[in-house]
Image (cartoon, rainbow, N blue to C red):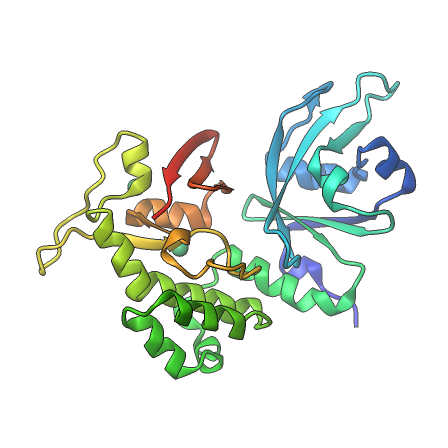
Length: 281
Ligand SMILES: [Zn+2]
Ligand SMILES: [Zn+2]
């Protein structure tokens, strides 16, 4: 059965990585792939060294994004378009089939030579692009009710680690559901309280950072699970991977043009072209 990538991407194209790409440390996108890049708002810099920016990676348990530069080679007669940076130096290997796709203006890359990964790639892109998890009861069935109860009440770090190990090989959909329970459960509540119910992004941007007051008298704020659950790395279910954000920023992180990089003591969000640094909890 061939995978219908056109059902999940507005536009996509696939091309293999050549020996030459790998040696030159420059992946040469096909004409169709340059159109995908353009549809995602990426334009080549004129010559190198070009700045690197993050591209979301699908279907790779080891990483959720990769940095790449995009430029026209100055020494090349046709000023060939190339993708450099970590994409080719640290991630792609010779003969990888590289899919580049765009959905809702968001650029994604995936290595698709192994058909057994295709379903999880499709699940991931649907989740990333806003499938409402609230409307996905099938995922809750796969998430043990006892585990949901664990997440609803304050629990020790060891209990979170046990859950992390238990769900390590779960589907992207179930992992996303797990993250939702972290955001809405006791871990999220503790982070919100510790942050005084302020939006950490608004604070970093110097904006008013307290929301409206709820009937309980507490300011309204939401919790966001920062690094995606796909890898389920140690500690990723704990409060250090959760920040408090206003409702607007929370939607923007999930649906907007936002990437995030992890630091030992915090995170750097790139929101459109603005970098915002927040500290860990
Ligand atoms: Zn905010
Ligand atoms: Zn979130």
